[in-house]
Length: 198
Image (cartoon, rainbow, N blue to C red):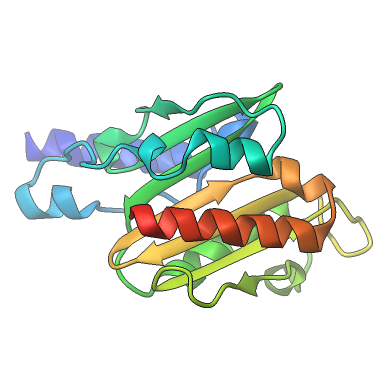
């Protein structure tokens, strides 16, 4: 049974790394071994309801026309809890998983590479990462628009909040097309609500 669990987890990690999700559900690298699986040898569903962490009204205030949040259970078997707020053809997506304390910087840097031209030797430093003091144990975000001169191949806005072992990742691509300063201010407010719910 344990061998079957490890095989399923390896497959999930490979699928996640290959980017087989819809573009509105891009994910950060899946944690290799969720804490629940390590403790008892079997993955378990996350205890918290992800759509209860961030209110529909808060998402709608940040992103016009955002619909009610819907739980996404595709990755709960590997310890990732998610909620999706449809917005036209896209969505705002919140993911929560156990990542270990102090891992936010690594996850945020990995997520930032999704919008960069990978062949650039300076890819790791192209995206402007912004820390948010006083939000959870640690928080940060980036907001970038397509910019071929800087090596940004697609627009996106990503927020991460860490509290204890729990890491929350909020993707709000709709904010990337507006004013960057306003988008970051909006994301900090969302981060504060997320932190209070973790």
